[in-house]
Image 1 (tube, rainbow, N blue to C red):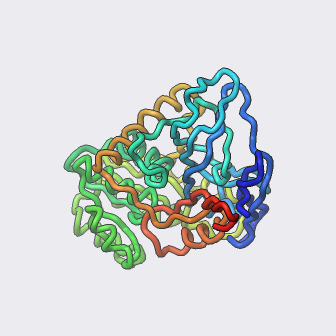
Image 2: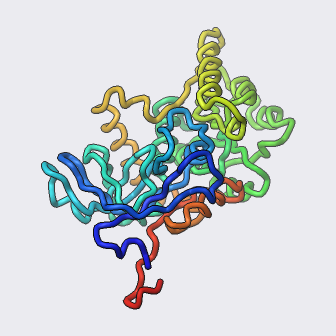
Image 3: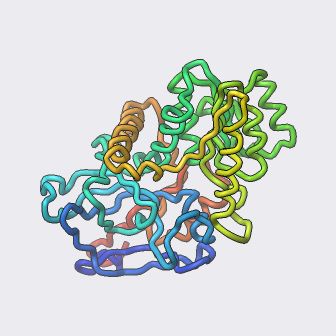
Length: 356
C-alpha cells in the first residue's frame, strides 16, 4: 500500500548518519500543520544536488545534526495555508529553496519563501533550475558580470549547475569552454559549449589555446589545488567564482576546513595587484538581509523560469525517480554517468485495488 493512502500521513526520506545511499530511511509520519504565515506544499519534484552527496558523508559545511531530512529545493502545489495566508494560494504551484527538508511528500514553508512557477512548466523541468538556476544566474550576472562577446570556463559543464550556466551564458552571447569527462562531451557540445576533458594533464594549455589572453570568468565547484589553475587562466579584469569543494568530497576529516582554506586562499588573491577578482559564492549569504534576499530570489529565479518557459534554455532532467527510491536516485547522481539533475517525484498513487 502506498504510504500516502494513510489519512493525514506523509512520507519523508531521512538521512540517519554517515551512510551509503542504501542507508537512507523512508518514514511515514503525520502530515505537518502550517502555522501563521506558512503553507504546506505537496511535493511534485525535488532534486538530488551535490549538497546531499556531501551531507550523507557529513561533509557539507553547515549541515544540521543527524538525523534529518535532506532536500535542497523543491517544486510543489500548495495543499494548505496557515492563519494569515491568502487561501487562494491553494492549488497553485511554487518553488522554494530549503537547504534541507525537501525530500518529503509534504513540506511546511514560510509563504515568503515561495516563488511562483509558470503554469506551462512541467514541475520536474522547473525543479532543475531552482537552486541550479539561481546559482548560475547570480554567479554569471550579479558577480562575474560577463558581457556579450566574453569567454568563460565552466567546470563540470554536464552537471546541474554547469549545464544551466552554459545555457544562460550562451543565451547572453558569451562563449563557453566547458570541462567534463569525455562521455559527456557530446551533451556539452549540444548545449553550445566547447568541451574539454577535465582530467587532461594539459588542461590549462588547452584552455589557453582557445583563449590565449585568458578567460573573463572561471566557475569552479571543485576547489582543492586545482583552484590555482582556475585563477591563472583569468584574463586581466577576469573573475574566479568558486562555489564548492567537490575535490574533497571523499576526503576524511573536517567538513569546514576545506571551505575555510579555500576562502582564505581566495581572500589572499584579492590582495594581489593583478586586476583579477575572486569570489566565493554562497547562495545563503544574502539572508542577512532577508528582504533583499527574497527579492533577488524571486527576480532571478523568475528570469530563469521565463527563459525555460519560452524555450531559450531547456531542462536537463537526468532521471525521474520516485521519492521512496531515494537511495537509487542518490546512487545515480553520484555515478558520474548522467547529464543534468536527478529528480525525485511523488510515488505513484495506488489504483482502486491497492496495487500500483
